[in-house]
Image 1 (cartoon, one colour):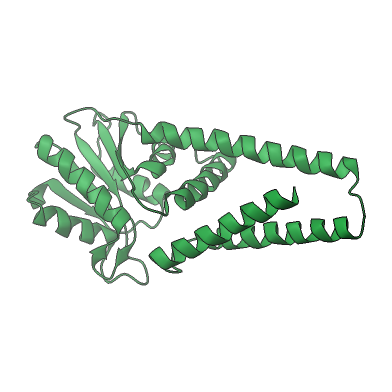
Image 2 (image 1 turned 90 degrees about the vertical axis):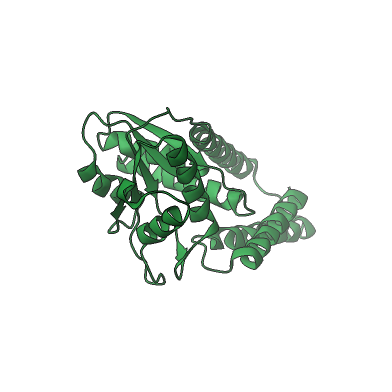
Length: 247
């Protein structure tokens, strides 16, 4: 157990360091890996000290800790499988409208996650020239333009006609993205949601909860060292939304 805690702690701390070097400190909740690494290393140290002092840990305590760890692992597995189902989504051709969910903008430039969403939307819009797109995302405090505007500029540069693009630039959360976009959608419209693959399962669940009758997902694959972090973070968000009734 001491060796396992120590090794897992090293993995968490190393991954935190890699992510900080790759993306800086602005990635939300990245501190979870640092905190987890510190807790695991502290646990390894405490267990080593108890062993050196020849103090045995009560069997009941080991049973409780083991049960809690097994329960957490099972819950995380269920959540990850739910996320995986969204990552396998495939849209119908000739959808009436796409909703492209925003992600952070660096100044006026899309981040990698947003650029991949834009690329996925552009690909579909080229293949389906009758489909419109709602570009949904507001402007954060460190962004020079709204996420919707950044998406619009990129798609227009890619040759998508501006009359096919609708800007929704007030939303700051996934729920707001989908809630505010409904004003441009009629009940008979077939809707596609474009977002990062790990984010799609929750987005579809929220859309259906909000009353979207016909909705499909267009996953934008995220190829990044941050994917394990995003999967963990999205698992927590999925659990929170289930508990709060948003899904």
